[in-house]
Length: 455
Image (cartoon, rainbow, N blue to C red; front, side, top):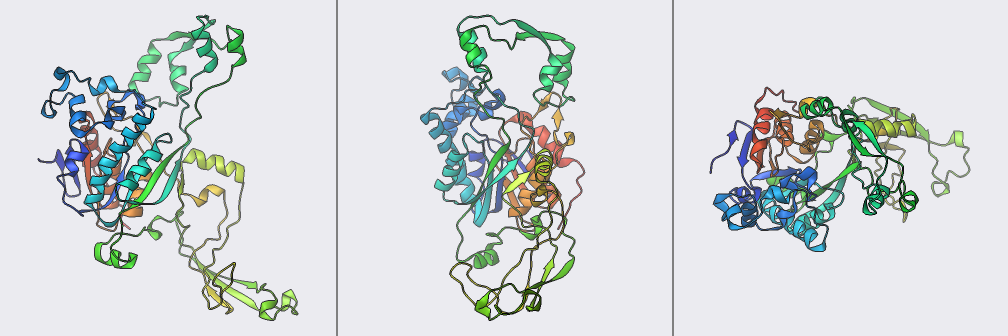
């Protein structure tokens, strides 16, 4: 078995990720950062169909792979014919979970002790992903909510469905193809959109209900607008303590300072405030102005990374609601006293603060904000991947869980965003992609001149 593509930092394999991972050495990668299929039959794509609930051999047969068995000639339906079938039954969901556990088991074996796994999931199926990751031997440490504003609701119009079932014809209306496409939030640069616009108009059912029952249920649907995707944050169990594991394997911790939110000016400020502690300290007879002053020192290193990540549209909406907020200086207390409510506190009048900022702005500045643009959506002729993640988002995630000079594994390479993110950050990366059509997209991304941004 030889890689499809390889250079100084990138190794790209073509094949089923479970089969490829079985060939990789144990404890050989530092982190797994991946965007696997969600099991929703997304946009009719075979790679996200419910055929994944079968074994690797059966999946290959479904895909018509001659090396995997009988293929189409043996009576199996192709993967493409299964695309778009989202099995919401208990059996289907359990099958998706078992498939997730199968690839997570191999990822667990390949990871070094204490290595982190970050895996995107769909809001309807990510609970199955999380349980599968846990059952594979990982500790689920947290979850990250990536919030965005570009989602489009895929909802059934209940009123129209009632009319259709009754055989009642609504008054039709003419809709321009381009307008219909734009309502879905699809970029105008797409060639298929230009072709649709050139076709002119098409007829669709109007908005006026044709039956009393449809009138009663006018305005009802079946889905909310998607606005976030959960990311499972898991870790392979440590060997010993965190300190021992980090020293031995370079894994087990998160790169907090390297992923702080905001630029972090490095500026150090000192604040003096009156000691407002109560009578326990013999100060109850002093006036406020006469009380001893406490000195706090803070260095602006940026804010502690949160488990919520915003895109620009969500950040703007949040800032619109929050308005301008003053900064607050975080305080780290050190001391010898104890309290049943507050725990350890500092008795002395001096306390050094290692975290915090004193800036002002909207509430969105507390969260990381990734940026995406058209250049991050590579094409090979008419081939493009439909679920491209923002490059800045993936750079942030790989930096969060990967030690300097470390190796990242992406079992579901897709369009290659994670691979490019690793190259920019200076990490080695192993990518695996099953769909042959996407391989040129990945090579296009990782073989172009890339300026590394090293910490």
